Image (tube, rainbow, N blue to C red; front, side):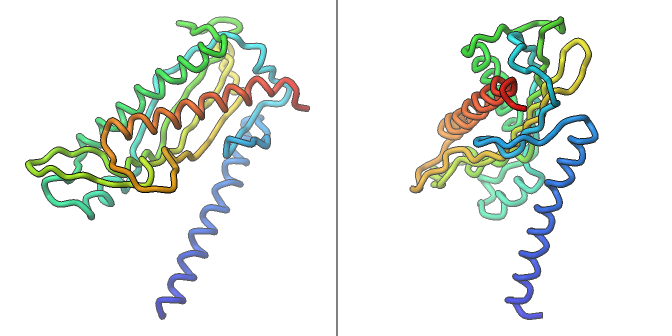
Length: 222
């Protein structure tokens, strides 16, 4: 098998896998009583028919769960010298920082839009369960005896998920799945933990605002 044939085969396999993922997500949503809804800013949005999400003005936010991409450590260390390689502790730290940041941003964004942050389930309270999957930070700081600068086009990427339920009945009312890139720009710039945090926070803010906009627009959808 020559290289061209191998490349075509790999593209076909990856494309088939990606195409298969969407029907699986749609089937799962259908089994849970949700329907897919077109969104301008979110990759996948599923809503329960006739659920009036805009009627909820209080939200209870669960602690955010975050996981780095399974290949993140291996891929990053392949291109780094020994003194700058990352390990399991770095992965846990990055995931914990991202989870803490997203949890605070979700609360701040909903509060800024007039929602009250509830401390416990109650009638009229929407329970939000945000999470981060496949978190990939392109150039995390890893201090060594040598001063090294890393340049990157974007800070990284992540899949952001949100489930919204009636806090009393537990009924699932909405699910959001969105793959986002932190700082998608046209030029290469130096990266650090500070810049990474800023651009991921920017991604989280935009995503939280888009989720609110879709929830509030649900009332006007058939």
